[in-house]
Length: 184
Image 1 (cartoon, rainbow, N blue to C red):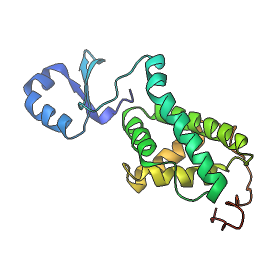
Image 2 (tube, rainbow, N blue to C red):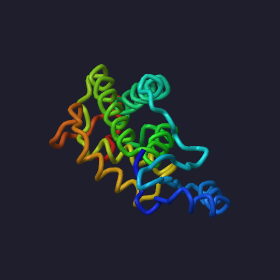
Image 3 (cartoon, one colour):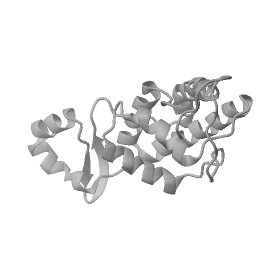
């Protein structure tokens, strides 16, 4: 869990302000409860992702990543890099971003790898990072503000290598025979 140092609160203070802390938690804020300068607990919104076992996390997210990458690769092979991978993926990644930035970026990386594999099966070149992020941003808009998407992108660019994505520019991918190209 990412620790927000502005949300550290002593256990005694938390007892005194418990009702107002619950109200703030209900509105989406997280608090980190401390005893003797050590975080001993977290007060989190009900929608917070609490998964500490990667096996469970993979079981939940793996199928979404795989199915979305396969479908999106098919769309790319037919129409080019138009649109995004879908609001479901955008909402899940946004939720992860709000809960644990490291996990969110890790799953973006997994999606990039899976998309690269799916595109290879379609005999399409993988996107550049910029093309990949532009498409993903479309999906993230279902649940994140533009500023949050910009923060997510900056963090992703620094935290993860995307080996399935080309580092240099590539041409537009053509759609079906006689189809139009989409702008990159």
